Length: 176
Image 1 (cartoon, one colour):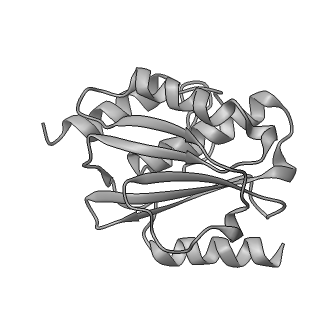
Image 2: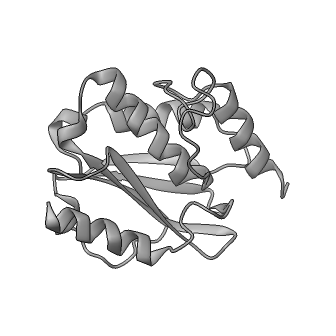
Image 3: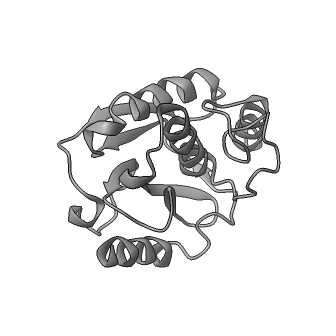
């Protein structure tokens, strides 16, 4: 648990304003590298499909890749530019956490840590993946339960809701 907590702190230190800036991806495609444990199988790649279906044309295409299972603390701490990395921690004080590395306007890497012990059921786990994917793709800040029935990032939906779609459209179409 101490290693997971230290890793979480390192991720946050990489991006001190990780969720504060409305940074977005400038790349036309972004790799989603899934190192999670088998209990998350199907959830990350399913969410990639959901996001590709809801993101505007000006947003990047997400390209899913299943990687060999590796714990977050076993991955290199160096940034993997142009990638959203999903990995698991065996236990932590959070269900999921996204660390977004950006330069105030452009996201260059995101690491999403999913807590294996907080996998309560498929619906809850799917909400966690969607919630963290919204951070990873749009840089949106947390405002827990502000819109419980219209969003996965500020609510409890297991897939992007109308708020998530509208927010993604707003942040990716602002520069178009």
